Length: 186
Image 1 (cartoon, helix red, strand yellow):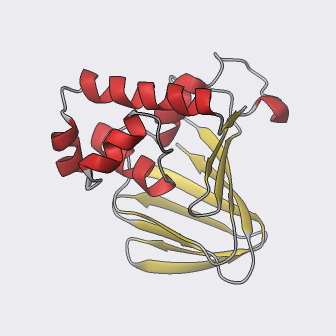
Image 2 (spheres, one colour):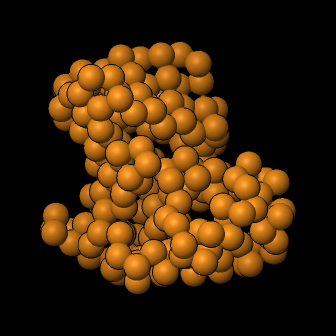
Image 3 (cartoon, rainbow, N blue to C red):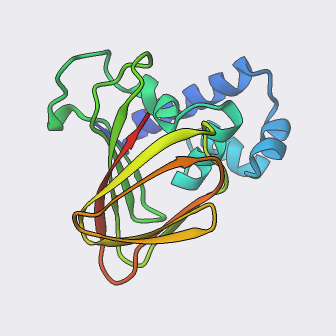
């Protein structure tokens, strides 16, 4: 499943609006807490635009939820096997980023696998983790990427793995080539 059609954008917009209302937040208060402008949040909730990866990261931080839980209601119910054709894919065309939910969806399990593809010459910065103290493992399948974790840069090539517990900002950057990687979150 790809999150790029208008009906999927509309479902995501509705879910994000419902999440904000359930948390008792106005657009203005969510804008203050997330650092995303009220106008942008309104356009996202009205399905006029799809959020960027950074915007989803900021919203996930406000709600203390993994990004997959922001996108999760758009996925199918739990299945023990998730075929590639059925894996949920979300795209951020602004950053040339594609996020594939590899793990079968289930909010009660603790480990999640995400496949990411980031085009050449891109930079995605997350100000704070959605869940402070969450363990991350990043395994590069192809290409190269620099990941800066809380100010410490790490240059990864195909076959390299970076493991960290996240409390602060992260930056994912590619240079001359795209990068395909897997992140395991627990």
